[in-house]
Image (cartoon, rainbow, N blue to C red; front, side, top):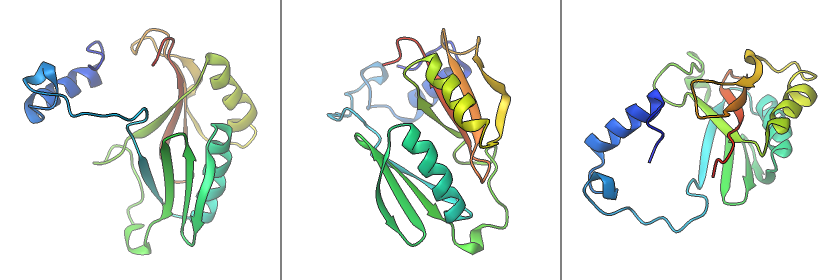
Length: 171
């Protein structure tokens, strides 16, 4: 189950207990069978400028081991193992308010790093030279998260928050 030491973990456990009865043995029912190693098939990120974002995500995802598998007008897709990431241009009528991570919807996306050095390497050799906005002072250990949680947070061209994180013993 989720780490009960974090506020998010507490919230998720409460949400699951009150809204998803029947999907977990700890919530009075069977687990929904998941035979896949990578349970997330894909997610899609809507962007304001496909050219700018395709360049940004192409470089970032390439560094993280993803390969471009599809491209058409207004959309690009990358894949690593069983997970696909799609970047698509938003229709103009939806661009007026822009993105803000505190609105309803996605707050941020966290990618796993194999070690702390990979987090530092992305920061030193990619984020800084490309002048990609970093948040919270760069890479550091987050004491209130899981033990050893080491991460750097940064933003894409639309200010969507991204994270590269290493957690010792994670999966």
